[in-house]
Amino acid sequence: MRRQETRFERLMRIRQMNTENVINILRSKNLLLSYLECEA
Image (cartoon, helix red, strand yellow):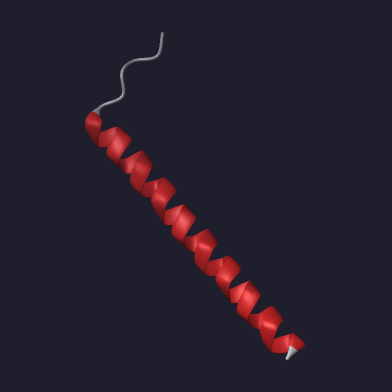
């Protein structure tokens, strides 16, 4: 059985996930903007 993760570990994991989500959102926004510029 896996040991219970500490509150700190959970917090760090959530922060990591949030950071990755923000990076992905920014990246897709940049892709969309460059696509629109090419189409214009």
